[in-house]
Length: 431
Length: 135
Image (cartoon, rainbow over all chains, first blue to last red):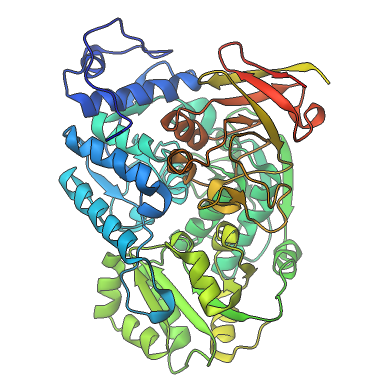
């Protein structure tokens, strides 16, 4: 079987690219810690050298992303190779939302053989010491790194939240990268591990009222879409109240999605932006953006419905927090999803467990809402076919991220505020 | 036309192939049907084009961590591009390219979008940090 991994080689000069290795790292590279660790650190050196990293930094936590829909059979073979080489995470490690919902809703059928492969992946995660929490909101439910703590997180929404809101330090660690970091307990020091990268570069004067979660996603689109740059760091100022975690989660997820951004500051809110000067760190902004209510409204106006198909309303991307579940339950209380409409919510098992105990799940399900656990809607396996089978043309969501990320599946997406989404689901009147 | 584009950072083996030049950002999750290798996002400048064996010329990245696995998956399915040539990239593209052993470059002088038409044959040489027009 081609696992894509090489066997242990004899000691050779540390071909460490631009990185200086300490004794332990040299031992890893020699193969003293086994072939899985050797393969991992080789990969990290190649990536780190591309970015000119000079050293590794120890990490305290890794968050891996990999499911059968995105890794495919080749990725599964690679994962099996890691397992056969004895891969075991040396730091606490969790996994991201994945593609298989394991739910009985007949409108959302997935492939049984792919489901079997996903169960194998989750089993392998357990043996590698990855806690399979299946969540893209670990920062709200699983692990909250402290200020200055280096981690290796493999989901963009988690990365931007960690860097911006918590003051922790991580790059996008995609695919093999977060697994490699979990196995070696370190990551190359480039990008957002370094002070210089974390300084603000875009000034955003935020004067809009920001009364709904969807407004924060719209804001992320306004700032991110015209400035697609991983190393751009927007600095928001002028906003007159303390945003909630869920609001900053929507903003971050949207910035990361539209702009591929990994960090923002909000003056007086986020920990590296106690003042405007601290946020910019002496750097002059390369752009100035002013956002008021009319700018937010223009985002909503930019979406339109397509005729000739059914519509699904989705609350997902990122998974909902407990308080988002509570809010939705209140909005759907006593109402019912309209005939011909569909409404789906995604969250993780931890939130779902409490939402069930607290009655939110019963309220939502009584209203005809389907609640999926452990997944995010846009990454569902077989999604294009699911869309076609249901005749879904339009997808309405309050997530700025979701209406951007799902487009390869040829949904016509529409961003609307949360109450509008609920009303559309319960009346079928598109607005 | 003939010409040389100098790149700022690069990794991987040298390859030759036909350029597919995009006018906007690209994400394998947002823009690509990963079962067929055809760009499927409605309105994308390369909608309907296959990425298979092409040298993708991409001004910026969008999103998203999917590229960390997706290029390796495309390789396994026999529909991978030949190389990734970016104006600006994020680490996902490098991590994904290294896993798939796919050449990847970042930064260009002159601007590849100005001098490279889609369909032109080019050589990507990461060691020399150059992209050379062959046609």
